[in-house]
Length: 122
Image (cartoon, rainbow, N blue to C red):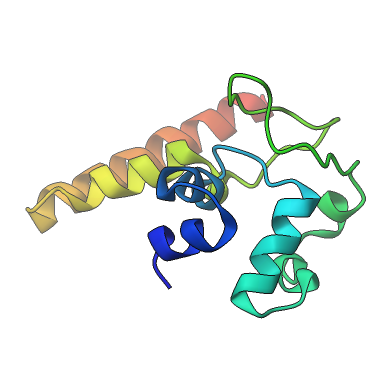
């Protein structure tokens, strides 16, 4: 099902569906229920891979703040793989057509990360 068709089924624009999918906006309980009904899956489907510490975090059932800004919940740190920054980084990385340049960038990134870990350990 396309984002546009899903949006129509629950009364949203496809842009709002994109924001939910990317994690830019939080999904409230009622909206999650609507999604589960349209997609014909139980609400629990959306929580199958949820880490235990996230499941224990306070549930906030509002869709988003007034300006559509992201909100932090308690001390919960979101999975870095679900962040918009990560998605943008991966997309930019795969736009590099030369495999050797891509590999060098990959190795550079790993080296910088390893150096940061070593510095933090000192």
